[in-house]
Length: 424
Image 1 (cartoon, rainbow, N blue to C red):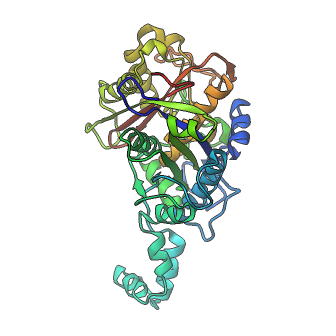
Image 2: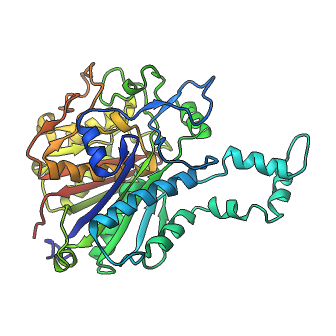
Image 3: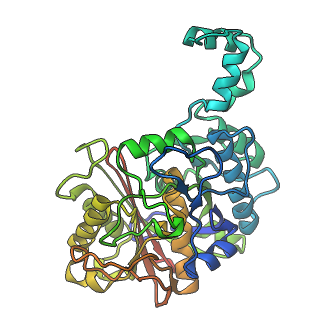
């Protein structure tokens, strides 16, 4: 089957998920639609003296000693195992397509830095030259490999037998959606019949928390933790860091039908637009995000009137929620006031690099179950955001088309359009 532009229709045949709500799509969906929160006090490291002491940590998956790169890999493995298992594609360790994975920027964590400092033999102040000397002994080669940006992708590609060079990418908070977009484009170009698309992030560590805090981006409403993330509410004060991973098996419709695979949904459209206005702030007119939304709708061959639900970026920061609301209104006009829009970040926090992929899975589950997840902690409506945010309680609804927004620092705007069935 081809779409209206003569391109292969891209479908999803397997999904996998791990978030602070649990492991696997079933447990996550049950918790999400019940309005449960996975945001809790951080126990991974001391938080004394920090303004923010909460996050959506995945405490049931470990990386000892702590290392964001290793934790991100562990999350990704769990999600990919589930997705590939559901798709029943290829043989064990023989996935018939490329890997596109969104991974967070990597740097050496404090436990490894301290070990290098001790290995340098210095008893006083340790210089960068001392660290290089310790590293040059060769005793720390596994760490060197671990802290290369492409290592997580290489290891997953080897384990699951993906084809070609794995692609690692980082487009800030739109990364997970970008990984999916690359998979869609590869199938549409006829380069492959299948693609494995992953977003993963295990970055809840002290330095990341401090950096976001210095940007005044994080919520400081620590007590109770589950009440801190409140997208679209008047009293929102910042996002809550989260972590986890999502994996999707993408295939051409023809390939999936030929092998009798169950189709979980269609990725009907992708929209992307860069914004060079500021490193962290959105362009005042919101035009890049608006163009990304319009681009996804047009790419799917739909109109704004076809959108039944918006899976919001919805970070709970004052500016993002306001600009996303204005952008959606610009795209859909007065009708937007009656189109349901909700943010799962109210329950799992902002999973950063993984967010676009995690929200893609929730979008597909919304279509599959005909139920819209709520925006919890919505007690003080913001008059500047006159939208139906599905407050506090999940809602049964007829959902054929979902628009999922992902907007990142540095002007990265990626929007995906999901459909229940293929259109010719």
